[in-house]
Length: 304
Image 1 (cartoon, one colour):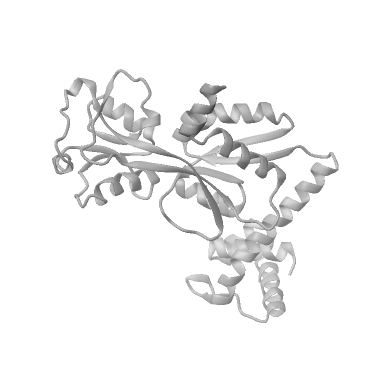
Image 2: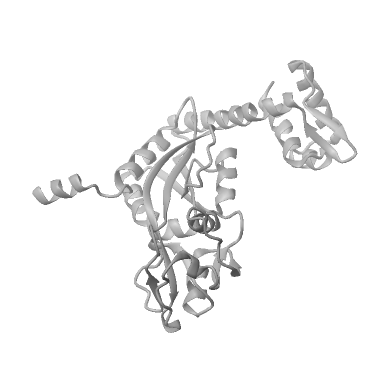
């Protein structure tokens, strides 16, 4: 069982089609089939079920998939660590996050982290919440900063950074009144992200937790920044993290009826037997610099 065989195996699992998988790994279809057959013979189990619709994983293949991903990731990390130790490459780390978090929460910290670690290259990748998890799983990013959706995945470790309050916003020119109850919001138009996005999950949860039906969504957009701009133009209300509101003069923050909702900002990374030094540095820095100041910290700073 070598890395080339595992890459071929994973290509087939991604595509569910031998022809497309063969094109990805630059093999003829017959050579790809031979590799899979050799792998199945070595493991003593069928990895795929073949049909006219394509190929699907058997239970044995599903068991191998997670290990194959980990083996290849560790293989790449080992090569990178050797090149860095030999002085043939710069140590680097890839950070994935949502656009809003990158601009409003991470930018100052990443600038500080870069100055404190001048020999460490940092790559920042922006994506949706589902895309970030896929990249984390595949190893294309080392750590993800996103909002917690309450889903448990044993493949990933998670650490909470802070609780970010969500705020109800409306256009300053709409003369919107403060809602008396959540029920009063059920008939007003809202702007929100698409279903499946972490922000939409936070929106639905804010009303679902109170046992109230979610308001109608008049427009679905792909970013929080667009929600704020549409709200400012008078297209509807919005429920967004306070960190994106800032000091804008074209929107107003309305009081939330009841317990204000909040979103847990977390960082996630893949569990490993061997943790790369660059990742350890970044995780420690994030814990030190991004966590909210505690009351005891305030007293110590004033005393100092």
